[in-house]
Amino acid sequence: MTFIDALNQRDFVITAHVNLVETPKAESLIRQGELLHPSVDAVQLTDNSSTKTQMSGLAAASLLLPLGIDPILHMTCRDRNRIAMGRDLIGAAAIGVKNVLIKRGKKIEEQNTVDVQNVFDISAIKFMKYVQSLKQADDDFLTQNFLIGARADFHTPDPDWTPTNLYRKCDAGANFIQYPMCFE
Image 1 (cartoon, rainbow, N blue to C red):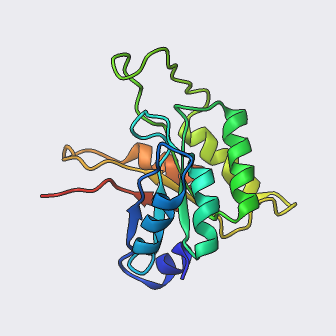
Image 2 (image 1 turned 90 degrees about the vertical axis):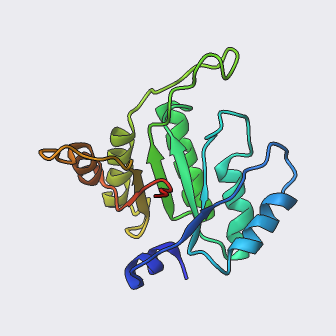
């Protein structure tokens, strides 16, 4: 079952993150995928979330897809310009990725890395709109069942709060919203 099938058929969908390795050796990643596959509807492939150089989510997806594992490829605007983001999206579509989670990304603090620049060439919402426009194009560049995800954070809202930014993400084309893990 794919992620989109699970969203359409179930009330509760389970995904899990795999640890993207800091080496070109794929064995650890493949083993994680094999262990998780029977228990999850999709695996999350983060995009340099630790600000360390790791295997790309796109490369990880190419290793997991042949195993029948449906990936959710994270694409972070912090790390690439719009050309690189578009290039990775084309590559993802070419290998069969059907789910992307587009996010801004946290600013890299100077003390965490040396000589690394934040990019932020395009906002997550603008890139979502771009992906949505590709889905709606007449040339079927991206299939209609290609899912665009967005991220939202938990917080205790004020009584008069409205989820304006979440509305903007949905208007830009987000098909699903992902929340980070939350423990009470």
